[in-house]
Amino acid sequence: MARIADVLTAGPTFSFEFFPPRDDDAQVELYNTLRDLQTLDPSFVSVTYGAGGSTRDRTHDLVVSILNDTTMTPMAHLTCVAHSRAELADILERYDAAGVENILALGGDPPADGSEFRSELEHAIDLVELVRSVGNFSIGVAAHPEGHPRSPDRISDRKHLAAKLALADFAITQFFFDAEDYFGMIDELADLGVTKPVVPGIMPVTNVSQVTRFAQLSGAAFPTDLAERLHAAGDPDEVRRIGIDVATELCRTLLDGGAPGLHFYTLNKSPATREIYQRLASDGYVAATRAS
Ligand code: FAD
Image 1 (spheres, rainbow, N blue to C red):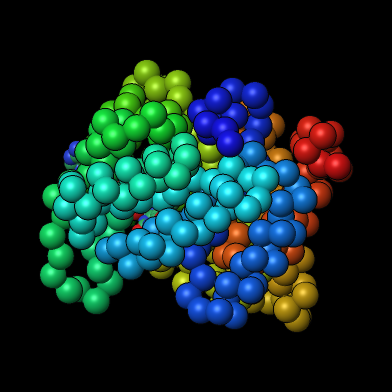
Image 2 (cartoon, protein in one colour):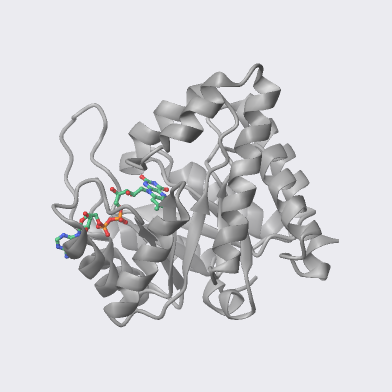
């Protein structure tokens, strides 16, 4: 086990994100993916938390299973939405008792179906404080290079992020496609005195149907020229190749510019992440021990 804050001090991290499987078939696919990606010796892996607590036990069970049954260091995502403070404290105490050391503290989103919900903690920063009070966790938070979609303006968003990072240990970003969005955010945070590591999130696009869905879900601007290239591609293999080329180039630019690591949104599949990782390794971006 390792604390991610410590791992980040040792050089660029390579980490992978998963979501809890919904059924038995998805579970088999995820375990194959975990087995495959474990061979890359990732710095850590993270497990998402379903909106409104919908994966409360599945997130917990997957995180603890990764901790106990693999060589990988897990981080549990947790959101404020639809939970009382006592429920969140209970979830955190269970993680602490199980030996889980890393938590990604998130605000979460209102239910997509518009149903009523009550949250005792309003913002992620309130959850960071709660996590600190429950155990000796290493704490990450979310960052949005293009600004959070619900923010009235970017300046206030950066100030809230800076305040959150003053209490947390590191941040991981929403995915984005233009490196300048990431570097611009880092500069703005530096102006606010932030020195904590902010790890960029990478989403390799491997099929055309993802294009508009991803952009809608995340609020990330999908570059018009990339969308046109993907739509013009002759077959799924060409789409995949373009997506992997573009993601690999983004990774190189980010690492060359000093990013403290890369966090891959795997969608519970390994091939695209593995291919990008291996290209980066052959370019010398991954330490020899890690790439072997
Ligand atoms: P916050 O930090 O609370 O920010 C939300 C909004 O409130 C922003 O506009 C911010 O500027 C504003 N704000 C913050 N603090 C204050 C304040 N004190 N006063 C006024 N305004 C304030 N969602 C899930 O449901 N499950 C997951 O597992 C999950 N994993 C994620 C992983 C990553 C790496 C990222 C980037 C996002 C993830 N999300 C997940 C999505 C996340 O929950 C949403 O983006 C959510 O809308 C905001 O979360 P946050 O932690 O940034 O919230």
